[in-house]
Image (cartoon, rainbow, N blue to C red; front, side, top):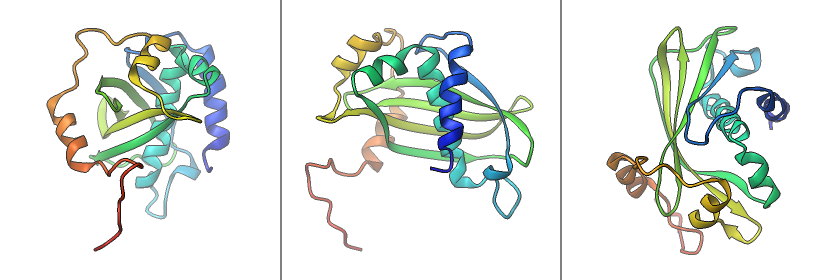
Length: 180
């Protein structure tokens, strides 16, 4: 909710940026705002994922996928994510959110996203996403028929297959009891 206005603004301004293919890299220039930092005066660790949402929206809007998804009643959701930090982004610092699709499997579309400042990677995340509709998850066949098929050379790296298998929770159709 804290980034709702910023997200809506990003959805509008991305339309004015040069178009991309869904399989290109989006580079979204941003600046660290006071609402992004914590008491240590750097971007809060939880805020990185919210800022990366803006990068994925930028890519989807500029590739024309956002309008087609929304017309079909599809919404993007994150099913799995991990991040590594290298340096802190600080108040008013300029940086870019670099976003690209790494690959797909039968359950998810995988993004790599980086926070880059002064030509250096400050943080890197891998994010597994899905599209959902009122009827449930949308299958890849339907997604790619609507937004275009991935290039043949786009192959999901093996470490992302393992990452998903080792970290995913059971589907919502199977029990996931809580017990320590």
